[in-house]
Length: 222
Image (cartoon, rainbow, N blue to C red; front, side, top):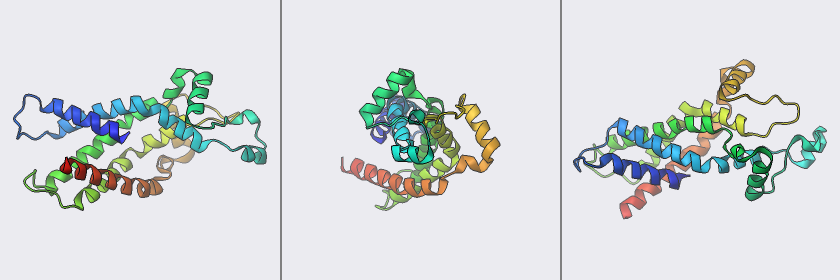
């Protein structure tokens, strides 16, 4: 996903610079549009994988079904990625691979906010490109931009996960993104949109820090 995102992002920036002076820096609007393009392309290509990941993480084990007295049909058991993809297409049709695509596309704003924040922090750290970043700075800037973006868009992530999970027998399905948001607010209050935020930040901050650190290091080497 990151590889695709960086590829599409750099391609979009190259197109945005076409016909401009080589020394001219891209504006925040340019970065925003490039991030939107990269995010949308990445989501369309990777949503089936994220769907399977969510389903497999939340599937109920056979022993747990027996303990809770749930029927065998209450939750499908996926053996792996290929089996899950095949079963989803067979039971839900090809469109089943794109459940949660609306909030996923809304989450493109996550990447937009992250890259705009990172580029602006990088501009400050390098004095608009007049000096090189210190070796540790991409670690800090990557983590801070990721936490900012993730906290801002976290409600979308909660809604996307709720829509993608396999429903148990008797559970009322969500009618869509707005219905899911309405029911979360009615049943759990606004805090329901931020469940798991703290462990999520603890997970993503080191990952983003390493991603941007390695990205900047490899670009410098190349």
